[in-house]
Image (cartoon, rainbow, N blue to C red; front, side, top):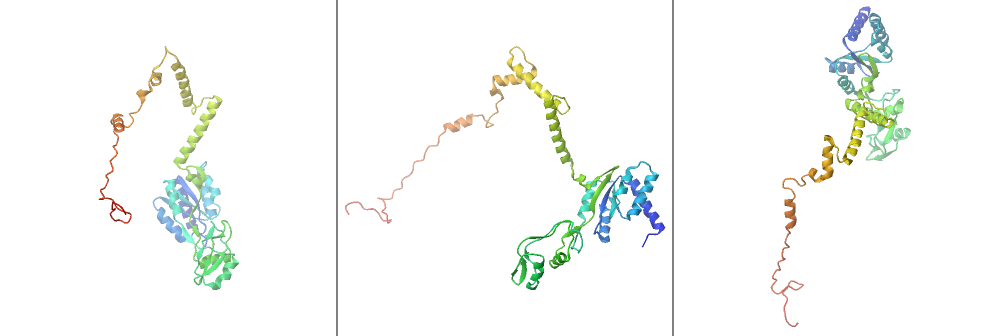
Length: 323
């Protein structure tokens, strides 16, 4: 049933308000997501973000009208995103936190005939609970089975459906028999709009730690390349200064009548390295170690037990004299 003119005007006003109020939004795909799940998502996002669904033609027209009223606005980038079964999640909060909420709100779902599998489906080996009379059904799907304790048992793990394939009637029937719900559906992040920039949602996987590590690696490569070419850059200057200091220090150490304050410590070390030695064992120097080395353990004398004349091999007393 088409919306009335009043409902359309209300929808247009709401979307324009969101475009003015929020600086960021997610473009989400809502394939196979029911109205109950959308309602639950709205409840979780309440106070943090607003979820707006609608027909693509209505959303595109509303965004165009907003761009006509505000020339030069970057919101125009969202027009081409209104393709397929999509919606908008507007927010001014942390994009990472909103993303976690959206991705956590998923529901398991059975495999329906003709549906495109969003992931691989693997049926694990083990008992199925099916009676032996249904063996032919498994043979049709080329699944190895055996009869164990009056029921069919799958002998090996089997990849039943590959990602991107359509579910057949036999595959859907088997998963239903095994009470397996292989798919999970929820709001899938398609792209992100943030302060005039539109980018893929995968960019949110890049954390500060990843950026720092990548920046450090790039800095090392720039410094190495600059040193090799002999071109001074901000990355290579610290290394050039360090190399120059090493060269000056090497020359100064060989001179007898010249030195500078920074080189004094190195010259003293070369003259007497023992001054810079550690304390060794700590708290008492080496005296304790010498005393311990000087002290030798005296071997204890073995006490000979008086067996009263000795014992023979059978436990009796050994008698002296002629046998």
